[in-house]
Image 1 (cartoon, rainbow, N blue to C red):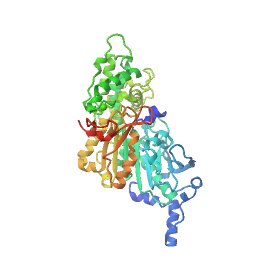
Image 2 (image 1 turned 45 degrees about the vertical axis):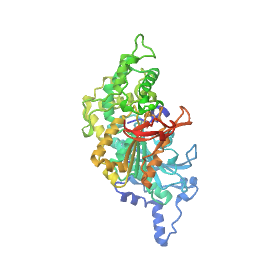
Image 3 (image 1 turned 180 degrees about the horizontal axis):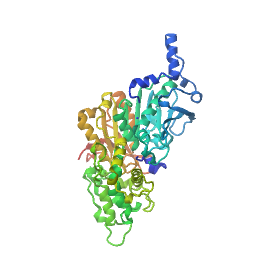
Image 4 (image 1 turned 90 degrees about the vertical axis):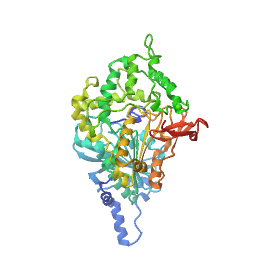
Length: 545
Ligand SMILES: [Ca+2]
């Protein structure tokens, strides 16, 4: 139930066959079957041309199927004309009625036969889902132009509202947690096979926030589904987030105006934190690379007289201390987990603090974290008007555990995914103030402990970019400039591990490149070598200290 930037800032803002054989069988339905019969009858290579060999509009209008897996039914097909960097595609839309309480709406985007690279890309949805990611320009921007040659697959995860009330239903919860993406991947695979006359050779997943979680959980629940997964800032422990942030941070912020930080006060703090910590990575460039060494506490900003935008109250200093503190609400969640770690430094200089912690006004209580803990509290209390300021998670431990056991993507045994050659690329902005970087780092450590660090190095990486938040903005480099999908594809197809990725920093509000930095593996960050052009990546070395 985590947002993507589209959730808060950029717009009103995830799962293959249980066995490879099953989707191979499915792939011989429809036109594939006709092709197979024709091949047998002629005894040669004169298979009829696939539907996709016709002009796209004609092929799209003619496409139909009565044999899709999981009872999937097509509701309509439509041609979307090229726009911006997006090409012409045929969109096949449909649904899977899982139960009276959960219908999965899905869409499959088919490029022309000439453009198709023979692969599929599932795009995971953020927030609480309830929308089709491929219909949201933000998600098309997230996967980038590199995704255009792919068949793009996405779903609303099995419910049509953006709230969390559907979570009381087990089928809806299971669909959202992992099954919807799995079912729809099989549907998309069957459609691609019928449309192009050949089965996809690779299948990837890319998502951010909850969409990153859905990619990660697929490697745990359905390890045969994907050949590669890009999980950006994955929200893998959402109930731990609610149970801990609610009483320890959100209640504090919204119980008194003196604890809430206005945009002006966030800017004041951002400037002071940057001044205190920017140079710890060897260069004062506005980027706080060495987040571990940054321990600034803003007591120097304490108001000496009347409260104003140029000082912080004691309550506001306490708020900041809580953002940067580990929390231990005594509620045990899946795999015995208790607590939720602090957020990384640098978030005040991104749009994250306003989006996720404070919102635009104290009275509105519109921050995402406030909304998330409130929605969860209402589900576990069974009370649609429950107020987070009076909610005690310890009274609802069993209900939170039920949710966590379904949604959490924290099984460290992803050996089946690794052993079949799957590649996993996790990326994090170090300043994320929605989903703690340190929680995912803890999870990645458990994977290394289970599988061995050298094995993990062969198929999985956790990369980070400093001074970038959950909205993918900030003084740091642009996360989309790394082209993580292309990096994943190069790792899967050519064995080129993503060891030397470079990210580009743009002038604020523009697409004018001003500098480049190496993308480092956590806990390393780009440290300036002390000499060399500060705009060039080669002048920086990935360092842990
Ligand atoms: Ca710096």
